[in-house]
Amino acid sequence: MDKKRIILGLSIAAVIMTAVMFVPAGNPIALLVLLAICGLAMHEIYALMAMGDMPASKKMGMISGLVFVAMTWWVSLQQPRSDEPLWALLLLILIVNFFRLLTDHSDARLAIRNALGTLFGFVYVAFFWSFFVRLYLAGDPAQPVRVAFYLLLAVKWGDAGAYFVGSKFGKHRLAPAISPKKSWEGLFGGILFSCVVGVTWWVLNDGMLGPYNFPFYHTLILGVVLPIIGTLGDLVESLFKRAVNVKDSGAIAHGMGGMLDMIDSLLFTAPFMYIYIQLFLN
Image (cartoon, rainbow, N blue to C red):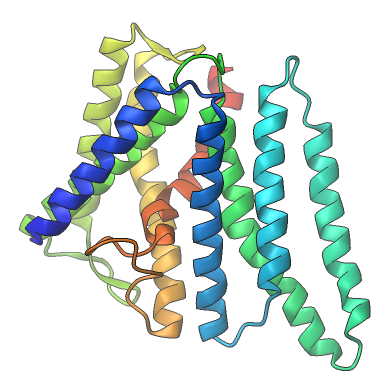
């Protein structure tokens, strides 16, 4: 095990956890941090695409993504909340992106690939990340976050459990062609850690998840499903990196990879968590 990486990871986690426990969800500083995370991750995904000879308009994709995330923040603050402005913006982004095909008609195939590449980066990072922003503002924006904090704990402790258990006991490869280090033992370790987080949360928060009632059996369901989805999200990014033969999407800190490496599991678990809440807890 890389002890320096573990110490650094725990230190970063401590800072993040402290921030989300004490900073009100509606504080503009939180918006700036969420935008910075999104911007760095989008920069990295477009860089990976460039390495793989997949053309895209990085500037348009990043501007569209950051505006969409900021709009998600603003819409989530409104009372009563209405998604109409948000979906109108999404429709505008899609239309403008395809209309840009008309500006480069000398090579129609390249123009279409560029449009699809731009939208791919936007959807994979900004659109998925916008659901984390929604969870971040679930409840009273004058209070510290609750739902997003739970998701962070469940997913990241699940990641930690997968790493520790997989490093020590991993023998059966989970997806050797994509990520040789991942193991079934590590996945089960992640599920165990995530379930412990869920049960602990349920006990300490009197069966509530922010503004939502949180029956005990939901803690176990999410404890199993969130690590699985998070692992699949990590494998998706690993496939991107393997396609262009790079180890990390970037280099934020020692052994931690890039921002995309840090949030890859959240990009998939946040939309799932949002849907789960709408269907079963809301």
